[in-house]
Length: 142
Figure 1: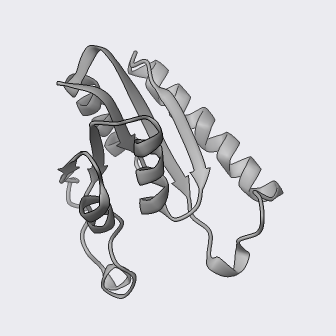
Figure 2 (figure 1 turned 180 degrees about the vertical axis):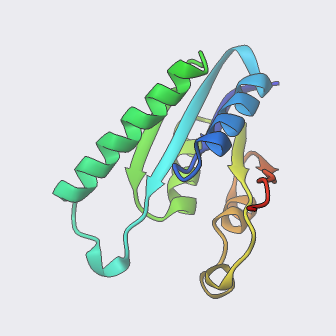
């Protein structure tokens, strides 16, 4: 069991997000803290000194969705939504919260992973704590 878990959640699939948060809650000590993290990535040409109006809107929407998800699952969690490169942001949250486990979901590799590198790969190679990679299986499309 773990005292502090950072669970990296994307907002693409509610079922995947539910699965990750539920798994994290099962691995958490009774008096532990769950940190649900989401990153809003920006293309380098769009990055500015601080979050612009669009980013603030997207951050607020993501915080609301993740808070609702945790309430629906009856899972107490602290929600962290930030802008930046996903891997670096998740690692920063893990360091700040003194996490002893990071949970991330794997996905099928694509050309972007080959060119830019995978977020999961970067987290695995640079994390200062254990990393659980969940290979969430999705139902085939008919």
